[in-house]
Image 1 (cartoon, rainbow, N blue to C red):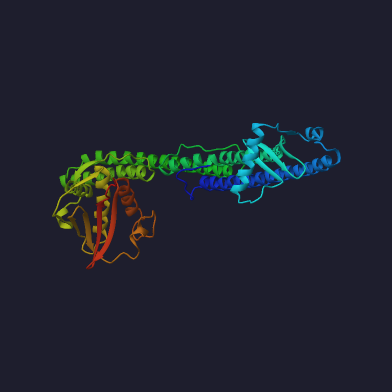
Image 2 (cartoon, rainbow, N blue to C red):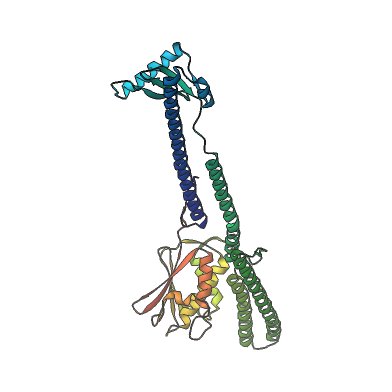
Length: 413
């Protein structure tokens, strides 16, 4: 059995390799036993021939003739004298000369076209016989081999069929990892694979119910928040003081934007969001994120430097949300409430003065990590957005400054 592109890290490949070795050993064993059986059968023929010749010699000494009836009973016939007899005699003699024998034997055997001929050349008579007996074919051995071969093939097919659900389970697990919660992998069999599949099916159903409950709760909360915000905006319109009116409008607009962001974040973290990827300039994305911050005086808190502007493939809403979160954190955790923004060498750098992060950056990518003054979701949301857009976030600490660098991953061709 030949299996191209055999991978030993695959369970099917290991099973195929084991059965291939078993079949090879079976063939070698059959060939060895077949050769041994044929050799033994030929030895039995030779012993029979020697016994027959010895009987003929004794019979000739006693009666002066050849016992043809006995030869017929032994399935041996006399080759008629003539040209064929001479040709056989010459063939036997030439065979003996090739083998380096000086004198012709009194007894010789030669096989010609699946016929076995015996030359008798003694001091009493010369005779050529044809042995019509053939080496016995080991039918029992062939039946045993065919049975063992069929059994191995049936065992192979049975095992391959038994592990076939693993491929289906793997495919559904991959679909689940990509956010498909509508998969079903319940199996009726009682083996270990079915137990794993059924346990996974129950886990998926539980997670699906939890996510649906969470989505319903969040949507209900956001819907209930929309009503007081709308009423607050109406009441703000009744204020006579234009300064207070403008401030209340900004507050309610900020709350409204926060609710929209929460809805978007919920869709991102639940993998239920399809990004609208287009090309945008890095400077445009940064300006959009600054607008989302709704700062009274952006120049007081931010310093933007564009050295080499470049184009990014991104979803505008998602990317501005991620940049807004990074800039907001930079301002919040800086002693002077100031952040520096730099566009240079196909990267966006957001920096601020402050202490170095106590943990590696990967620690903050986990949701609800230990964080001061927050839920520990900021960098988790940023990382989720960047991963969705095939970007990477790096952290460096240089000269008393925290630097967060965003670059786009190079696409492999």
